[in-house]
Image 1 (cartoon, rainbow, N blue to C red):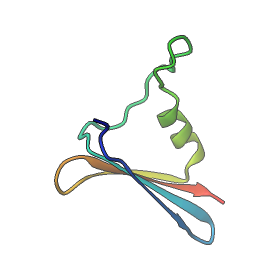
Image 2 (cartoon, rainbow, N blue to C red):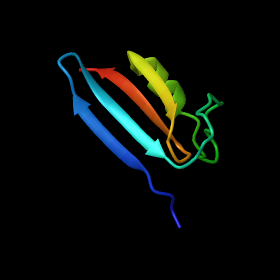
Image 3 (cartoon, one colour):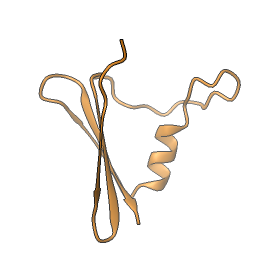
Image 4 (cartoon, helix red, strand yellow):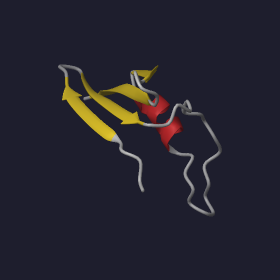
Length: 72
């Protein structure tokens, strides 16, 4: 079974807010991108390079929400 994820988008005058909720309590971490097996490692680097602001908050029943403000 795939865990439930929620994506929310909101437009602001100078930015787009992206919020992703997931059930894992593990915090995002930077890791070396996997160029061979395709297991990831690109997202956290890209998000922090592109976003004005990034915030990770724990969910009320576990899990977390990652919010980012991206320039318009």
